[in-house]
Length: 74
Image (cartoon, one colour):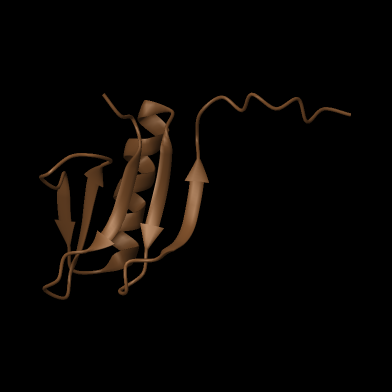
């Protein structure tokens, strides 16, 4: 099961938070900021990713809270 989440418009003026691949939303909000905050909580808890879509459905932001396989230490 996916541990990644997305914030997207619900088509009715609000915003939804749902797991990638899920048909039903985890949560619904009237403000995008509230949806993003909830999405971050869920993604951090699952050590996954959060994608945020704008009203036209394009990804505008993306955050990762899991283990980074890249070695970025100098």
